[in-house]
Length: 405
Image (tube, rainbow, N blue to C red):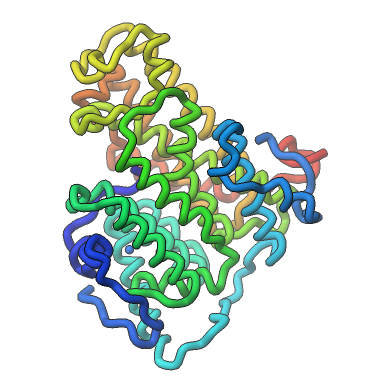
């Protein structure tokens, strides 16, 4: 997954896994919460979206004949349209909550602080980058990160063996309560406050939960089309959640759907990188997140994966997979510079560091069975000033190939 495994306080410190698994939780108002012990090539001008766009957007489940890329792109169009109906970008002002709950200010501050602590512990580089954001955006990104982390831990954490589809259904009901302003605990309250301030839509959150359902029932992917949809569910969704908070530079001439598409590409690139890094680890759990038809074309079988031997066939196969992942990183780069200037650094840092994992797989001679590719601390430190320098690049102009001529 796109997040790391947390310590026990993230899972058990708030009791949310037990309550979701057993179906014993009830939503609360923010004021009554208990205190916790301590997470395409784009076309057209989206500023002038008409009702015709809405008619293009259909349910992913209903459009079974479309490719995964087309289904996901329809979601991208919808998210861009929703943001445009609210506002082009969030400026540097402090946004007041739409509904002020008496006595909630201190509790919300504590909730956001806890989200920041989780982000600082498990996503150190990204957390450092958020320090450049305005306080409002900073807290909102922390809240989104923590919700995604907790969701991921349902099927990928220490208690994953106890999670059932029914538990994920309850988690989705709990999500709906968050968007209705009825959070269950302090961390939920931080997200509830965030979605009341920014034009964040519930659909990407629901889709991430659907990705968790896939992990419960699916261990093989017949082709890249199936894998693409999985990568969207578990990681591409994060980009769609984040763009409304990070904001688009007011000087940018890029269409909103282009920026969303770039954010989607970064999520896909990160997840594909995770998959290529963790082949051996996933095989140890009986999982193969690689397109089966492409394995067959390369002359490889599941037995080869489980045997964990690096052969010329495996090297050739991996070179093609890495090339594909890098293409998604390339697509993502086009949109990072369109973000609000205060939001670019953490995104550039994430992009550059994750991209280096692919380099490390190559350094390991494509042995991702017994060697885990990682970016060393010195390389991480060197990447930060480079990411900062790239964050200073101004957004596209009217003559850029990234926008409609």
